[in-house]
Image (cartoon, rainbow, N blue to C red; front, side):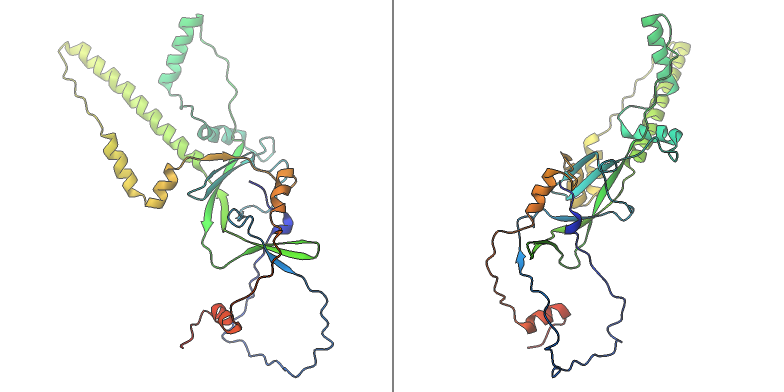
Length: 302
């Protein structure tokens, strides 16, 4: 994935005016245009080399461009679902960084389970049996050192192109789509799942201890009731709650990709794809009336 060069950014300008109440403008066709000199004529070419792969990335919550230190450290995509995730680094040495909160949130960035009092007691018991004593040294805690940005596809309202100038020629490449990248707080959901799993383990241990206590006190045979969950039915019910698009997006596996910024050789090679070698003249088959009608959105009655 190559980062777009600053010279390839297309901007959309909106004028704040009400066309329905704006006064009409009268053009004098008899006015002499001899003094209105044409300063330059630029040939325009259409390039389709990258039209299937070119997207505009928008970052509504970022006001700074990427550099060698703040650029993505990891990237992944879901091609069929048109989803992108970027991991951006967080400066843990900054004076504004809370180490305490960073340690808490880091629990959602790995697959380690949250240790309960029973887990710690079991570890101490195993260490005493193995080494004859329990280790009191505190392990260095992990920190939340990256923020994940997730994509949202922006519905197309019009057609956009990217323009690149070279040797006095303008080369246009159609854009396939626009996506917005916003922070995704999946680690918070993962922390919540870990706490639920930890509470479940505590309840299981307490239930086992209570059952063993009752069994030892009564000395009678206990009836063992086994309840099995139908995982297939539960999974089917959950899947049916999602729409087909969301279901396909969830089932599609993430594919890791490499992010290249605009200063890399790989990005320069992709940038060259914006220029076409086919300079065959295109002939327009649309009349002026039809073109103006397509812009107005009003259908004429024939």
